[in-house]
Image 1 (cartoon, rainbow, N blue to C red):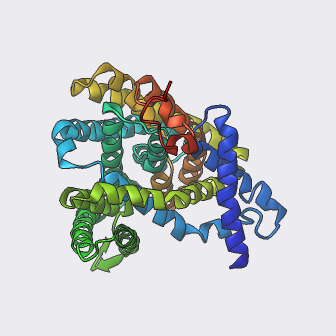
Image 2 (cartoon, rainbow, N blue to C red; image 1 turned 45 degrees about the horizontal axis):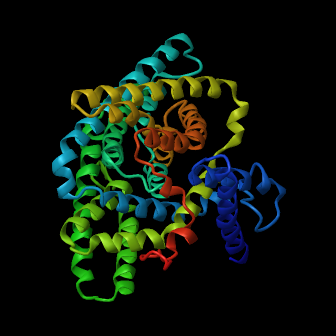
Length: 430
């Protein structure tokens, strides 16, 4: 326990110090945290095997899974705050159309490209693996996007649409993955299962939304018994942690396996709560401040999870590069076409696709599941390589796109000390 606490404290401080260095070259703090995690991981500083100084093994990093899942739950809960009815009335239909279309277009494009790779090099990439990678390509990392928006205080039509699309994108991605994984399993085993292709993914989405709705209503009910701001914040934090724990439950009824999506459950909790609680905005703001160090840990640990050994595998690198280019093209042109279809302004049409490039936790979770396929190890390695690239450059590209759209102002880069200093409200006496 002593070693773990020292390691976690050094992880937070290391991430913060790295953010000061990356600020000199105008890189987002998210990139700094990921680089710090990469350096502290088992392949760099952790390889020195000094207790408490870095993560000494992948097993140690995986042992912190509860922290990363909790952080992801809070991030999803915060994104749910974007689904306010007042906002959905103006952008909801556009967000749903764009979220679904760009995800499907990305999956189809990546599938076509990787199936072509399979036909040319069947010994490198199997057909089931190619199909699954197409579905994984649809997923976007909400955490990196949210952190960039928070750091630079981005706001405007593109930012608001982006937050909605990212949330919808992950829900669509889960369905596409479940469908593709069922088809891949059928191709591998020669037996088509309607349960795994249609029933289980549909149940996962529906039950996740129901559980999230229930937790949102319960949170609002319990909040009413407390009046001080600190206690209400404590109730909110406790409920998000409870929701994360419940969303990890898995059980089986007959031949049907039932589980929940942590992202969907926590997003729905935040959505219901923010629409029925009159003081939700203040509480959300307080919860966001409380989770600051937890979010830093999330990205540092995510950086430590990146396996540098894949850089020594030529076949993985080759397929990974093809995957990255195909997915980037799918996200960019899929978003552009969807925005034009829904008559979005030019600055949104030109910049939305770039902001959807970051990929991390959700994609890695899908890849771990796909690794059970025959030859599925290539899926995990390709996604790991893609995450390494996307997480290091994705936040910077998101920042550039939001800046081009005019939604990141210079105030987002001011010092907290300067920003919090009481302003002079009257001119000095002459």
